[in-house]
Image (cartoon, rainbow, N blue to C red; front, top):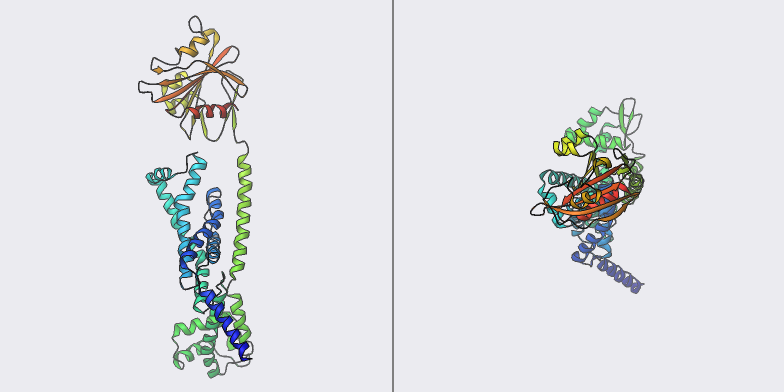
Length: 442
């Protein structure tokens, strides 16, 4: 028997030693990896739902916690601090770097790089908005994980070597607190003989008894009275109060059970919320992926253009004048601006009967006598390109003595008229011109 006891003690010792072993360094690395993986719902909701949801911070803390455990992190006093710091740090990185990069690459088609981040922060308004979101996110994270962090601290303080991702140990602390306050307050009821519904006392009497006889501070006496009343230990009968000695223990047990939330339940709720949010985002994305283009018929033709959300059309002389100036409005029938790349598209139709003599279609296309002056340089040979149902003849050119702009001139035969579409873009953005034209005529 003694030998068996020794074996049990030895096994228990090994278990405790095993649980206390580990490394804060490897645990921290694991926490970072786990928290980063668990941050995906936060990113999705932030980027696609344009929301900051505090409960998702619990998932990040959960991921960090299990990453810590899988990496054999030490279950010591440093655990709560590590999980808290890693969770907040991940949120900071997400809101100040990752999410802005994802948003800018999604909406502006820009490369996700530190250079892009630098450009974002150079804009004071954008930088201010990012920092405001970061501050709100940090507050939400602290609120979301505070209970879990306190729970870990309580478990470690109580000597537990198998720390759980749960708020349950706080219930045990609360039970102990209620029990202590009940014992202290019960003395006043006993002194007044208010221990059942037939024998009761005024609240004022009970508070005075606690203060005068049992040296309890008045504020504490009132707070304890309310605490015990809320949890059914103090009961009311015909306007007066008594101490329910018969149900004292069960009331304390009920107080413990109803005053705390199990961490597992919280995680399940978090997952359900995430699922619902992602489902809503997915539906919104499906709706958003549908063709949102509006069709516009080019003046004096039966050719339709598709204007997508990243293109802005100016289809009246007044609109063209307000945006581009009077010279443009006098000549062009419509203008289009690509909001992302700043490609400019200008269009006009001309009657074939108005183009006589030297102004043949071939001469217009090759020499650009009608559309331009001698500043156009390095005109390439004319080619044929079909965009959607429209067949264009076009050529490319470079503009200005220092060649600061690139352009394409597209010419289509529409019957009794020629359609001329002139596109401009900054040097190096030639491919974007073709992309914009394909969008217009796809």
